[in-house]
Amino acid sequence: MKASSQHRPGPGELDVVHVDADAMTLFGTSLLISAGATSKSAQIVMAHLVEADQMGLRSHGVLRIPQYLVDIASGAIDPAAVPRFDRIAAGRSECDGHNGLGQVVGLAMVREAVSIARETGVAFVVGRHMGHTGRIGAYPAAIAESGMVGIAVCGGPPSGHWVAPFGAVEGRLATNPIAYAFPVNGGPAIVADFSTSAVPEGVVRSLHHRGVPAPEGALRRADGSPTTDPAVLYEDPRGSIQPLGGLFGYRGTALGILVEVLAGLLSGDRADDRARTGSNLALIALSTGGDFAALASGMAAYVRSARPIDPAKPVEMPGDRELRQAGDNVRNAIMVDQPTWTRLLELAAIHRVNVPTCLSES
Image (cartoon, rainbow, N blue to C red; front, top):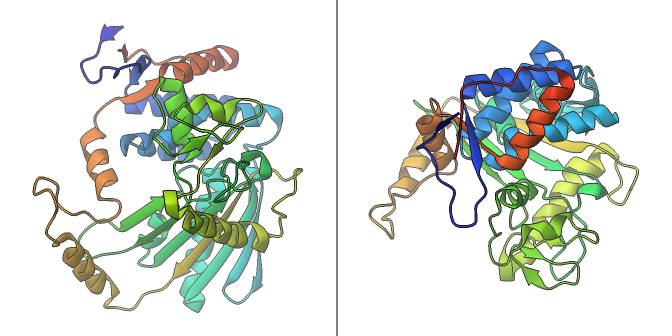
């Protein structure tokens, strides 16, 4: 393999591997198909993961492939499952994902939400029994492509309750992200996507794989002491992630509880049910009037026009940074941390899948 000049590990950072985006897509698709996914489902998942990496959101990129394959092998995910929808009231639908791949179920929920909102003006679709859903901002973004306002929230079972409520040591909530998107004139939708915890678990996992410390104030050990060591989240007893907000973390906890209500309780799941598996996802779609996109464009321009603290850093709308990064990286290689790559090589051998040759290491 030839040396790469695209990236050099920072101080203490472990080596990474660069894989051509198209080659990575084909590689991951082949792995998922060999594990039982249909070609269409595997392509949906890999397009989602590669796009996340190109946006700089490595916590929700190809890092997740080994996790999905492990879940398929254990029976936690059925890669051939087809979600079922029941319209239980005007504007409202429930989805049973039958433990399908999260991105596949999520896109089916988008289609359901848009269809209902076109009939009623508003839709609320809640789903359970699905695998990891990836970057939830992708789902309201897809709703916004239909000219609607989209909102998404996502929760998880007690096994994924990494986040301690404000003032607590033990985890009681998942990272419970919230995302929204809305259309504007003459450009991509505005998309916001953020966890209600100080940092997403996937970011902690990525930092752990790369040998990089976590931000100050984000993690605590099992004894409650603060730490920047991401490994504490994977020890027994494990540490916890703090809620979003620092000294005002009660706000992050309140938002996390809202997500649990919308995605968990309204789907019929108990928050403390240890037998509960899979992710919970809730989508809201709101139809818009004819002037909405123009009004939204005016608002975005107004926000961006604010005088910046640093003239070299113009004010941005949510999602601007990710769009810029995706534009810069669309032709670049995907950066994979060494532990993830090593595991992918092991899985390729198990599933007898060819490994891409257009690689570089640093």
